Length: 286
Image 1 (tube, rainbow, N blue to C red):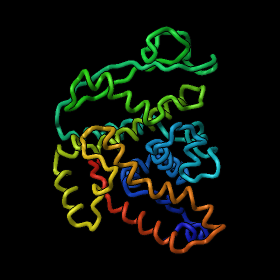
Image 2 (image 1 turned 60 degrees about the horizontal axis):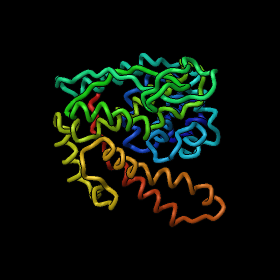
Image 3 (image 1 turned 60 degrees about the vertical axis):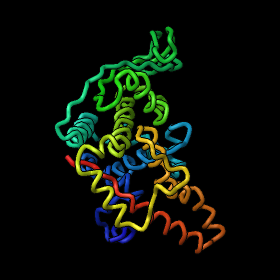
Image 4 (image 1 turned 90 degrees about the horizontal axis):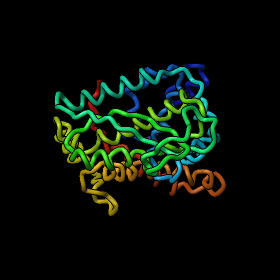
């Protein structure tokens, strides 16, 4: 039943779909969000954070995912009733399932980032490794599970990818509870990307499943001239950005289609987005 009919009949509506790669990953967290609007915000944040927009502020994410106002995203992070601990535990369970008993190395690392002013919780003049000196900023200590990468390379560059590409410091909150929620969402996005990396897909039959999907599909995604065939995390991010690109571009131009209707262009986008939904993620449920 479509969403509009559900609303007319006063039924609990389904969340608006995005792209299969995001929807199928996020569905494993769906029960943690009691209201469908909160679950939609969870999915929209995944899209916006993994998108190539330069700054991952809530207003910029709202524009990218075609939300009229960033207020709903702000409410989701600041006021809605979901638990960071429950989300974190669910995410860690997914990773444990994907590892399938393989050993990891636990790395404890601190990351410091500049922050202006004095209103944000835990901001003070302290040593910040990112700038190599004492400055005004916030420091967090994080634990990472390392699998299959060179230890020094991962410590020096691994988490920097997350910070630079996914907007670790782009929050505009001052309350640490809200900042912690933002960071956990980023870790969820980071996990989604990591689970699509070859190192995870090769742990079990996911690689075989992925091959079977591609063989049974008329679409060869790797033929895209910007497709990256390397195995690193940023290479995987690049490819997933190509998968979500048609939907983001459609949302960008859709307001013009209401002014200058073009059924052929609309149909073309529908076909292209449907093709992107054939790219099936290989996630371990748990």
